[in-house]
Length: 206
Ligand code: VGL
Ligand code: ZN
Image (cartoon, rainbow, N blue to C red; front, side, top):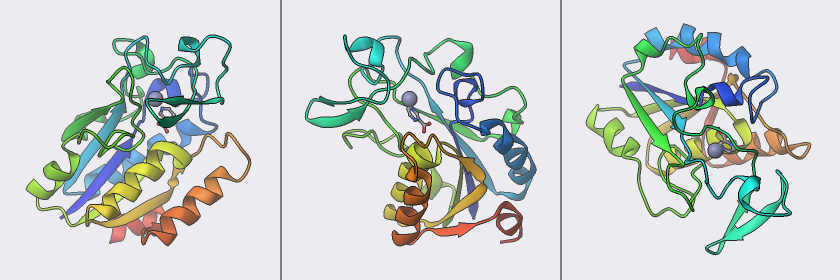
């Protein structure tokens, strides 16, 4: 069985959003086109409390992009984004969300961020995604969404580590690129971990 994992296709990551990803809107039609071709479609959703410690606003004197230590873990700081109950946290309007079988929330705990759709960054809690996919008989996982250099990367790396045959749908992703080269480095990291880099038309045929 083949699963499509849609990472964080939410308003705040779209152009004009609180943590906008350049051309983030361009991946939405890719998701809509691909969903009917998969046995299982899941989505991750970044959902933070208003005082989440990944927000620069919670650290006086700090700005988005700064890195701080929280409970011994390096944490990049972001603008306030994807706050539970706000429009920014909702899936983007144009997404055919009715085709999503199950949504996995992440980043819901105050002091721990979560880039991967499988585990939080401290690797304390599983979201249940791996168990769900196994329960549905999934062997092949295709990952796309936002952002290539953060949540897509860590979700794909955990998928391969969890034993799934993992593919990254390149034209279905866009990155934050906080530092120039971050997206390319993320793609290299994924390839080196054994993730197969494909285009959406190829993902449709496999
Ligand atoms: C993301 C930074 C903070 C992402 C989420 O979806 O890649 N990046 N929260
Ligand atoms: Zn976040």
